[in-house]
Length: 343
Length: 294
Image (cartoon, rainbow over all chains, first blue to last red; front, side, top):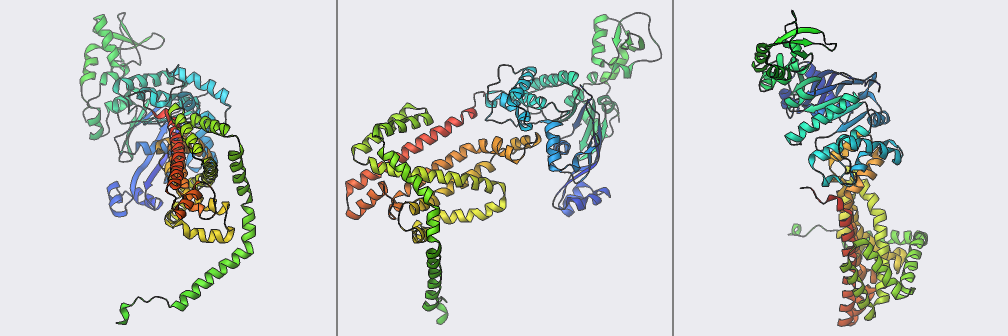
């Protein structure tokens, strides 16, 4: 499968209100959200968003409710029209597409999974799953064959003829996921897709998504308000507050170097053992002769498990070829896992 | 105390206004009445055809077809048996032919109301401006005493089936339009957004999402339309529509208590048959919304 194309978001603004366009300059000149609302009765939805979403990776956009994250994801397939700025997919600016081009873009390049599932209640699992292909005009027989594959892949085999109401929340969202995957689009947009599910089912769905991504390598944009989810899924994470990006980077970067108090507060409770890589903590200046080995690129928690099992105090960190690239010891591992981020 | 008197128009002025309006409408009727009348001929032919079909076919066949349709719609033995009993009683009391006329009339009226009502309702749901425009017209149609709009209708068409049809449709179509509009407007915006996100065009959204999700409300509209057209048959009989309404009218004029009650009960029983059958059908269409999983 060809490498998926990334998405570039450049100085994107969204201002809700009758004269949004006229307000952009005021915001660019530094007017705050509160002031804009008070003086001009316009709501600043997105403020100068610049995110480069890598192709074939999972980009998480995290923020609390009202931060603008759902508004942002709806700009990628233009369910919401921007006030200013551009959203580039390859060389195409989504914001400049005509209605027909936009419809084709939505049909062939994007697929979306929704927080409240948004399944068609009068259609069976199968008929829901073929929806995207039906809209594209794919013959029903072929569409059903392709859909059946994805229904099975998300673990719903045997439920093809059930109606959404007959399924649990977790199963309904599997239908939502199958519907999106059947579209075979480059970009997968997931708007708080797992937020409505119980914690156990949510973990389960995250695993499903990660497994799928391992073989599919789509450009996934995942919206969430849950930091643990963001850290688990995100190759890259952008944190949004009041419509602006306040920090972006890998999960480890955000946990180790929070940009401000707000984020530091957020990451305080995070299980750091599952975020920080052994590579970050290891001593790169030396290697050991013999002893246990730990693979490069795994998280501290797993390394700690190796120490506990082997009883050793030190271990070689080895790269893909099995060549040692540094040494990790128990003390540093535990220290990195428990020290809260200081800011 | 002159100012206490309301400054109304003088008798002469009023008369002049009435004369002008009536006069120009009469001229209009004379000039175009025949053409308009001709345009409605196919409708009249269809109504007559249906009437003859129901009346001239052997009654056991008509009864069986009725029972079959009711059963197909409701899938309930009780409603089907009720239908057969009611129709047999109607026949026993000598009202079979009149009932068939009324059924034909109500069927055609309902078909017309659906044919015009659903597209209008869709149009209304799509645009707030159209909604603002149509709503007061619907209010007018529902509250204006039917005798008032019967006057121009009779002036154009004379007395007979077509003016009756028009009067009944005017009275019975508003719930069809309103409930179609309402049903489409109440469709879950999340589901519509999903349809948009997958690149549906307007027609695909209408056919795949809006109409199916609005169907329960539209079915309620059809049900209301049937009930309202049945309630209009007596009024329609005053302009020459034959059927149960005429029996009732006859009974009022001659103080025939039994005849009036029997015809009235016949109207009630076909109303109940239509109502139960369409409601059960509507419910069956909604099978998927039964929550099986808690």
